[in-house]
Image (cartoon, rainbow, N blue to C red; front, side, top):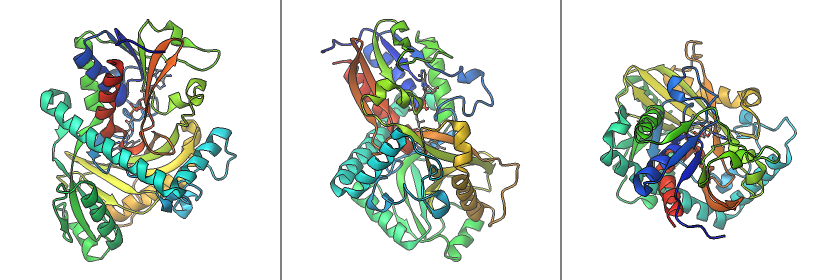
Length: 419
Ligand SMILES: Cc1cc2nc3c(=O)[nH]c(=O)nc-3n(C[C@H](O)[C@H](O)[C@H](O)COP(=O)(O)OP(=O)(O)OC[C@H]3O[C@@H](n4cnc5c(N)ncnc54)[C@H](O)[C@@H]3O)c2cc1C
């Protein structure tokens, strides 16, 4: 079925993808926009962790850079998805029986990791989307700086490597990917803080380089966008889950118009999306909020699996740390917290090594977790489909770099709705 240009749009999901899509549709197409979210209005909530998707939980801070989503199915990761976190892997489901969706996701992940051509194609797509995202955010920031306040505006991110090989690999990779943007490769202390400097001298840290990037307060940005859109006539419907699952089909209750499906991890479980073979599942992320020990710039420490990168963002007297990968399949958050304990412990261990000289973290700094929506390929799925004679644009599955890519995803959504 062919569709004409949209005359109104219903957006399912008010995470960063749904919101930036709503913003851009409103700005560029000038048509009525309605946003539906299963959760309550985030502006009225305090301890809201876990009742929302990834954008409102998982810390206020997010980094955007070209490497924010890495090419995650490389050959070395074929086994990673089978190993438990205690053995340096990502698989939190080892001890439980996997359901058919989880078995298929794991199989797909492994087969991509084994296939150099598919891996290369995916990597190109991921980095291209990251780069577009980076530029789209910069453009938006130039046009509407007020939406971004407060912002940690640095225009670069420092990446610290824990071993020489990673340093060289990452640096070379960066150079290949984005010639000209890498400012320097240095074996000195980059972030202005003596205890980390000591770790360079002890050989725990090996060097650093900087890439173009920034850190934003994602939750504040979302709230600013909601305020702005409401002022400009966009309708928000909170506590309003839209179901596309067999027997509970509430899509018919949506007013006429096209649909943008931006539900993060939870929407992937509807039969509507499963039919399209979109196997969207959860990968755990961890975060902790510790006192800022004197850092002025956001940076990353490239550590060990399953922690991978630790993203560190100073906001005044707080230092927000996030990292960790634990594949938790289709499990609900309550179950995930038990299954993913080893991933959480591994993350805490790394945090303690770099920021507390190996001492146990005090209970004052509780660890929290959130689930990243992820496809086995790590590539965002933006697809136009027809459902009950309506155009539906799905934009889901963007994994760890979902924030980086979201401004670009919104541009693609607008393009699809305007054709
Ligand atoms: C700890 C952590 C650190 C991260 N760090 C970074 C980073 O530094 N850089 C980066 O680029 N990315 C990062 N990410 C990833 C990024 O935050 C996510 O990819 C992104 O926020 C996902 O946005 P989204 O809009 O797709 O989904 P979500 O934010 O999950 O939003 C989906 C929304 O849809 C709603 N919803 C779901 N189902 C329905 C339904 N049926 N009906 C109505 N509403 C529904 C949910 O309530 C939710 O509000 C991080 C993630 C985590 C967890």
